[in-house]
Length: 283
Image (cartoon, rainbow, N blue to C red; front, side):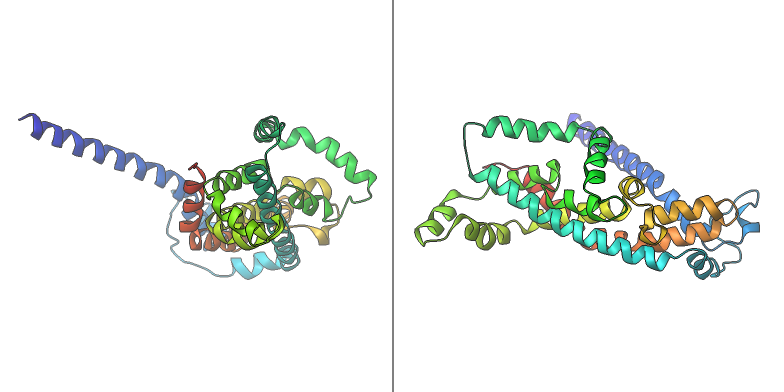
């Protein structure tokens, strides 16, 4: 009888967990579905009471009209350039620094690791003022350099930590065998280590791409010329100018600019999860 009760209790717990997960998924998905639905509605139907999730008379005019209200083609080009450049810099620099932390030891290695991990808890808003002063004195305000340069100088403490953890799972015998064959540390890094850590590279690539594609704060601080705006800043500019009276167009443009990120994430989701999971292992 006790076995039957245990089985019933286990099934009840599983059903309860699934219900909680379904409820949480609905909370996350409903706003997205509402945005998609609103992008196909007329202004009259948007303010209809009671509201409808499925448009009664779907329209497609919101997409070309919303895209034409502002120069979103230019904003998209700027965002692609910045996101691609910053992502490449983030992946390369964080892998390079992570390799150094994982393979080269000194008396200060422990202290430097603590300092590195401590910077994860440091909000970016704390450093924005000194960074702005630095780039202002270098004459880089209203350029893309304040956004690109930091990505090539470390790539972020969390990304470095992922590479450190993954590099530590790789046997040192590979390094020693390569050194016997006459390979330098740089050759070991580029020819042996990087091909081995592909899951982490893909994970950091996805995270960095999503971050820089959606980044609003940094371009807003450093860019003042409209033609240099990114999609995030352009959407805010569009909302300030037309968002209150063109809600359907606003949702349509937001959906179009969101699609590349969604496609990228779901395409590499398996590698992303694998990279995060395996980085938690330690040899």
